[in-house]
Amino acid sequence: MSSSLLHPPAQLSPVVALQLSQQAPSLLQNAPSSISPYSLGSLWSAAESPELWTVYENLMLSCLRTGDEESAHICLERLTARFGADNEKLMALGGIFQEAVAQDDAALKRILEEYETILNKDPTNTPISKRRVALFKTLKRTTEAITALIKFLDASPTDAEAWAELGDLYVSQAMYKQGIFAFEEVLLITPNAWNIHAKLGEICYMAATANEPGSDNYLAESLRRFCRSIELCDDYLRGYYGLKITSNKLLGSHPRQSKTDGGLAPPTQETVQRLSEIATSKLSEIVRRNAAGDSGYLGYDLGEIIAAKELLNKE
Amino acid sequence: MAQIPIQTIHRDPQLFYWILIPITIVMILTGVLRHYATVLMATPPKKQELAAIREQRSLLRGINLRMNGNTVSHASFNARRDYLVTAYEEGAFLKEPEKKGQAAPNPMTDPAAMDGMMGMMKGNMMMMIPQTLIMGWINTFFSGFVVIRLPFPLTIKFKSMLQAGVATRDMDPQWMSSISWYVLCIFGLQSVFNYLLGSDNSASQTAQQMGQMGPGAGANMFGPGQDPDKQFQAEAENLAVQAHHYVLDGVEDRLLKSLKV
Image 1 (cartoon, rainbow over the protein chains, first blue to last red):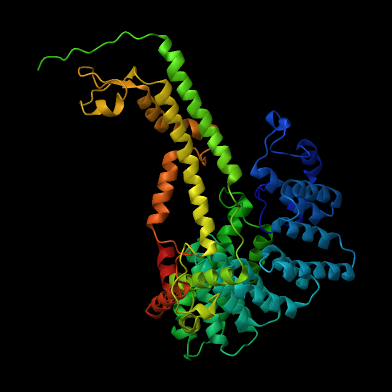
Image 2 (cartoon, rainbow over the protein chains, first blue to last red; image 1 turned 90 degrees about the vertical axis):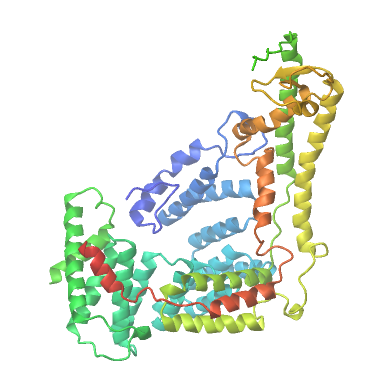
């Protein structure tokens, strides 16, 4: 997967982070160390551009990932010099830096208190509110993280990222019903996000295997969520994987004609059988063509391909 | 019809250097100056308080539910709808619940709206003052003679408009005085300004006019003069009548059909 400092992938895997942070020394040397829009020097030196600052921010995050604290510090300094320390986003970046270099829990608690003072002065500071929740998560104080997130979402219910984080926190505590509620809120904001449909399918599947009350409904709903994610993105490996697992489970068990999920009839055995076959064939096609290096099939994440191969081999 | 002879007037070639070029340069420079002055005088948008943000976003939440409610199941949709409709009708999200039922704040007296209006007035001033000054300057120094000739024919009525200082009966309306060169430049220099200052510049006149007409014509949702309580009630009604078609209903059959093809 190609990546650059302008558009880093959403999940910064260790390999990518290393690659990006290795560009740090050359970048930091080439870019001018201080940029003032009014100085005479700006007439002939490189003009600043919005991309420059995005690059600095992403570089800082990659360097913190790989432990290169000096370069990260330099990036942070340059950003602060340009935008001033009052900038909300910059306060959050500074917070990330401090959390990354903190040595122990006591230091983290001090950072937490700093966040709370900032929020007392200005409760609308969104980036700092989110950093506070992330810090609770780091300190493993999950209930406080959930409470803080709920308070944040009361003021700002259209923030999809916050709802998704809340859903993850609930699922980590095995509160599946609330997790499903949170991810449904994400869908209300971004209705065509196939990854969220797949995530909901996974949560429903987890709820079904954990034998929550009404597991048959969960299984059927999980199947349908994966179908929808494939409908929205027809070479979505995660969708086919989930489809295969849920359809196998549905074929294995024998769903009773009980009260159904949200009033929908359970899918017929024949449909489930056909879906299972399609999922198997598509998964093997993806794995095969990815291994052969066909164009259009190279963008898949290696971990997902390996998981798909194992699933296919299990049969 | 006999061919009307084209009137030619022998012009001093120095006309070009002493009139056309100075007027053009002055207009370009004032445009650039106006752009930077606008940028420097622009006030940053005022920070909104938590209660105001909460009010706006809760309304957006209702709109999202109405538009994207088909992605969740009937039970989920009904639960959310009942909660939101009750909350809207009670005014649970209003930032000033005591003022429920009173009229909307008058834009003149509401301090939040004054800033918006001041911004607009500043923009208008920046447009009008340079235009007035330049027109006065041209009329003082460059009147009484014709400068250019348009390549296409015009009717006689245009003479009064475009040959301002020259009162002759027989001269073709195609000959124009310098004030008409000024008018032509206003429209023509916009692409020059786009090149010099980037496309989002404040020296471009038609963008401003369109900006004033466009969003002004549409209703301003969260701006001054809108009663949030009425907006909530309207949204509650819209939600109450919303029909719901669960997208997952029959998705497996749709998928099979599409994959078969």
